[in-house]
Image 1 (cartoon, rainbow over the protein chains, first blue to last red):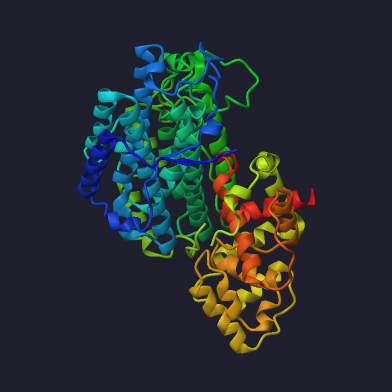
Image 2 (image 1 turned 90 degrees about the vertical axis):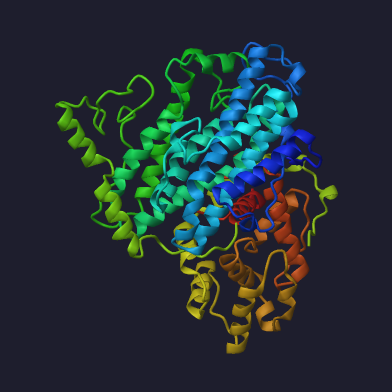
Length: 380
Length: 186
């Protein structure tokens, strides 16, 4: 049973961080009046978090509820690092997206995007709260950095969160592909040995499902409207899939292995799986779940296409990778080794990924028409 | 108004429902009788400004006979669709007897114009009863009974674990109401 506990009293460290947060909102041009009556509550679902460490070398012991219960400094550091990375992505996405509100195709999309940005900020608050409340001076310093790094300046921790989101097609791709990675990360942390982190995940995951739905439905509405041809949309799918796959980190990752040994971060299906974890290939296993989910979702999105339009597909996980064993190698969308010289490869990329010319056509031709199926905002 | 007191709510009783919610939802929403494709099309086809044809489409999907309302009654109901805000249901009391006579019809109009309002379904009411939330049976749109029904579903949304929340093109109120209907029949 998921009973959400909302924190009423904050520590002075976190109160100070909230003042810095207000300055951050001003700095990035997010008008607090857009929030309406939305509140950045700190929410915990303690019941679903569980009381006993579920995997790793500390399995069976009580979950840690305070910093001093964590037995080793390197485990504390690993937790701080994970909370910081998670928090960093939350604020980064708002920096990437808030300019889009002015050009929303419908009121529904504007309100959906605004809700997503509010909830991403709340998730950032949640992570900052953990850092400020449980990890002393070190945590306070890391919480401050969440507001100092900036996506527009390219200083966010993960590459995808420094990429510009120039238009609404990228927004829907981002919420579909990149927020989906976020869902995986949150679920993997939902079984964490550090109980406040695990208990943070339930409320965040509930909110994240709306973000993913916005992305998937947005893409489906575009396909259904039929103004932007599927072959053109495919280029954007090709662009975002490799980015999403890279977010799962390196193959044979030792940091993922240590996080598992510490019980800090589990597998995507940690509670459902009856098999022993392959500790040497944890990132690969999570990435495979994600990749399969992408293929299933794309089949569903593609069913909305008009007659005569080609089916949208998810390219091979070898294509255009920046991280892992396929990084920097030349593979086609089908996963075949590319045959040709440098200029052939560049020509191929120009053909299958969005070019400047495509961007221009998207913004100045397609998006000047009724390019996405209309929908009213009616709450949820 | 929150009609269901949190203190009177037995959370343990909900566990089997939450555990099977996804399956319950599919069983009901994707059944032939429910015509999920048509439901999902209505999410788009019903929009402001509301007209009679939109209400007709909702009636058709619900399997209801054609409205036998005077023009003023239809106008009054359409105006209410603009004015009403969750959790208000007292506005229903201002309708003519004819409009209030069918809670299924009115709740469907409310649902397709403001998703927070759930479609009234006798099986969903029984599903709530199995969870220990007793809502009286009714055919007329009683604002207090309907208010209790809607806020009970809202309460379930609040306490449900994240595993219940599908990334689906269906409002959450429908997700829970449809799952409750299958659970009520099980």
